[in-house]
Amino acid sequence: MDNQAVEYSSEFNDLLRTIVFEPQEKCGLNWTVSYSHELAISTKLVDCVYLTWAFDWKKLAEKEVDGFTGCITVSLLDAQMTTPSHKYAVELTSDINLVSRQIGAVSDLYWRGGSVRYKLKYEMALQPYCLASRCLGIDTQFFARDDTDVTLEIENYHLNVNSHILKIHSDYFKRLLSSKFKEYSMEVISMPTVRYEVFARLLAMIHPNVILPSGKLNHYLFFCLNKSFSEEFYDGILELADYLSMPSIFRIIEQLLRRETHLTFNEVLLLADKHGMEGLVDECVQHITMEHRSKMTIVEELQGLSVITKKNIFG
Image 1: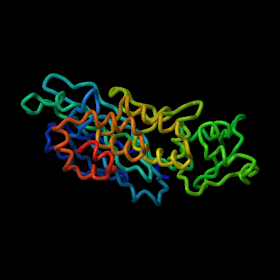
Image 2: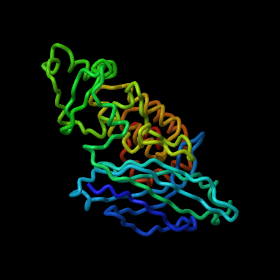
Image 3: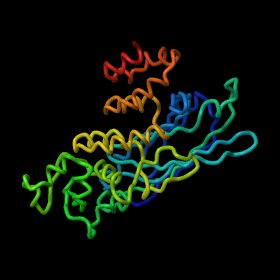
Image 4: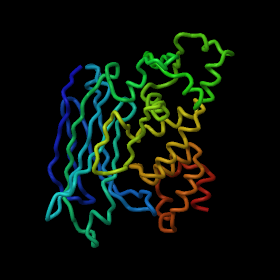
């Protein structure tokens, strides 16, 4: 595998609604960057600036590159000084190739009349990896230890886990690892429908050395990927948690979304509605004003909301 890191730094551009970043390619990694204004949840709904990076590395598949880890740094420059940089952890996998990050509130980034206040640039430092040899915190949790007593086979990887932890959090594993099932006496239990990247992050959330999504938390810190992972995995984790009957995962993610998140308001609402987080859906609906309602009727992605949630929003 080619281990050459991808490093890139853009020029400073005026932070305009019409800002355009040219498509880029380096070391076989292609990407584009788009700019948008989206609502985000705070004490109320706030109009915020988001940057979204879309990546493609099909050319590197033959070189056994499964993804990238690293960070993206965004810097803002006004007439007097450069503000502290915003550093964001990034994880790219075969399933996750979009990274969207909140840069700040529109009211903070533009003058009251809407005129340009800042120039913006971004820098990337991404390291390619082969999944078979990757050694992040979410991977090392599966190393054999004195307290691991079960081996799971997921996508040809053998994962050493603690059956007691699994049975505490999962009714699925409580049944599977009982004496009534053949898996109880098997040396290796195969789980052919489960994806490694999702399962690793799900289990990290209940592991004694817990690893949680980084969320937003603090714009000015870079979250070490051995201690956190990105929120792009939420949907897959919740789907797997439902399959494995793990209600604690739903509670953890719901609290993380309430605290701080890079997800837009629409993304939080859709995620909560899809996965039955009724309390979070109710909180989202309470933030919606008449002005928001009129704009939400034309947002295509919100057509995927359940009938009940649509009725609560639009009447």
